[in-house]
Length: 575
Ligand code: PPS
Image (cartoon, rainbow, N blue to C red):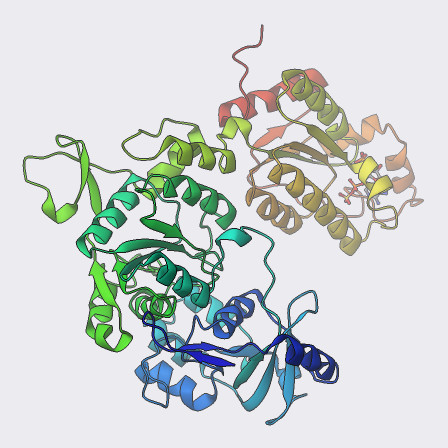
């Protein structure tokens, strides 16, 4: 373990063992109790081990935790605003005691570090939420994680690092605090401004960072978070491809890009202080803090959790202790008359400002509408269009539900053929009978088995939808709750169009193509849907079709028109 003193960044606490000692520790660890790190813990441990969280040397023991929660200070008196804790289940906590070594492993079982257990304690997580986030409202993603997703017992103690967490993506852009410090020193960068981001960068961001660097007479480090950000954010793969385009917009050799495997908490002011410390550890001398830094959005009453400049004020208050200069920044707006960006407080009264909000940007992407060049670089917009194609190119699932013999399969087949004629997307039919043959051959017709069957269909359909295809499903799917679950799985990636094939039971029974209704009436088949097993009618499907007086072609056409109306297909070029 080394304590590295450098002109930039102060003391760096790296916790890794040398290669030989690490091999020996791997052998010893075979006998230690083992904990599989969660995604959040993997992010935290990476920055604990590489010095990104200096001066911490492990997960917080109770005294440090309490000091941080209540006063933003470690027991040593050092400023630290965010609890960094190892949360475990009660079952696991029951298997370990103070003084034990615990092997901390990644999901593949690779030994990342060994924890020397100092104490095991049950925190008051509601108190933690109120102190750290100023609220126990679970509309706050940090609070939600703490109260609904973290484990109830914390284990504190020093860490000994064995293997850095493995990454297979963008390895050329992942730099540790030591690597960045060395890079800055080698390039003669004595003053470095860090820019934190969890969003794609557009012209306004480039203008802002450019001005900040100029103002501080410093070089620039674009330091985006690629660990965990706010749920619903653009995935980091797409963002990093965008940052690589943006990097080319800065004058050569002035700006660097490095990825930070941080798990954000969206903790506003406290998070901003934490971010500043982390950037100091990465060798930066200045840190940009804009409006609503690490903001979690609004609470369940529709009010902002934090004031727009709370974060700037708190970091400013502690800047000497952190050892980094804050560069506060107002929101940048495009000034039409000047054809350039300016901070909002520098705009004259007679000037026209232009802006596109995040919500409006997403709407335009979804609808395939134009994004003006004053707002975004065409390369960045093109990159984002690949990730967020317009509706006409997104995947979707058409989910037919209805009684046996209602006509689901027939319409589904007709629809498949029509969509294949239109072209543009691969189409997969997950018909009830086919699924039961290939995916669910061991299942019967109990409620549990039917639910399992539908969930399997939902899973396959969600994968197809995610990859831009069309899934047509045609099971009975008699239970509302299960259909709702499947809808949720699919809507994560694309549209879910529920079509209730509402042919009345009498008509289905009259047709009785497979002779099953007759058998059900005679009691030969038990638990037959509509006869002696329930069918819960969809309350609010996208479409309801009664096949009694319509041909399959007409029914499929109704679905096609619905899809066109919703914007998922275009019939314009059809003859
Ligand atoms: S479910 O409830 O969604 O899992 O049903 P599904 O997978 O669509 O399978 C329905 C087909 O299985 C035949 N079958 C039965 N249906 C309902 N209830 C019972 N007990 C039953 N036993 C066999 C029936 O032929 C269904 O096919 P379709 O195409 O719907 O007529």
